[in-house]
Image 1 (cartoon, rainbow, N blue to C red):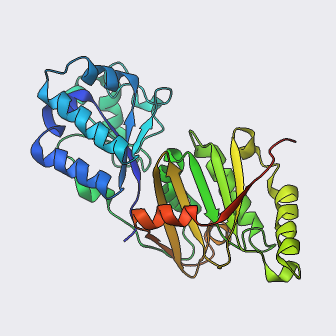
Image 2 (cartoon, one colour):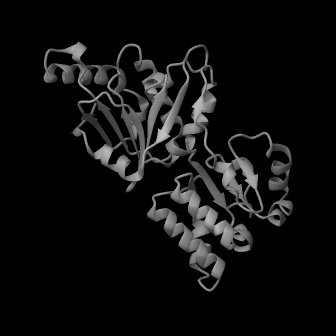
Length: 315
């Protein structure tokens, strides 16, 4: 089963009236535990629960946020996320997937009510929800057939990319002539959508076709990386780039935020992110592909295993 990591936000009124009920609180906790959601935070949300410790619902909200933080599944969106409902306009919200608010809040706000009426069933990127939280909203997609529109693929990765402070591309063939354009397209997508990326790691195996010993093989990778990848605009705001060397032809894609790591392994015809973003016709995928989610402990251990070297970012 593949889990879609979705960014959610909710009004304090929703949590006070609905979200803090035992069943909803448990559902949210389960979604965090299963790594299916990220909770978006902003200043109004924090100030509300911090200034009213006597309110049991807001105390539960604080506890839930602390639980999400412990699992590394919150994201600070002070500059991207206005207060849910209140004086805000949903047209200005483009960083989350689901906004949970009460029906009364929405009906009493013209902008939000109009958005709900006209877009709820048509907007794939942002939906307004009221009432109980439903785990079925965060179900998984395990198979994407050949010819899938790339926007569907990008939507799949959206939550992971926006949440990540570091991304690890694990692929021994990512800079080969038949895959490098796919690698560049994926970097384009990250650069357009990431909010707080600080580190990128490229993990590879020295390729036997490009040298008679490990030093020659590694130098080939370094040379191609410098000539084809290093000048990508994504590196303008990156603080750390590392190349990791490992001996197996493994291929993964991993997203990290503070102490948390979420790693996807590839299966099916497509084996890596470079293949996935190497499109067939127009903006359609070239092969069938699917993913699986590594266990938490395995994911963290995997990322620590290569021998890394730091890339000089000075131009």
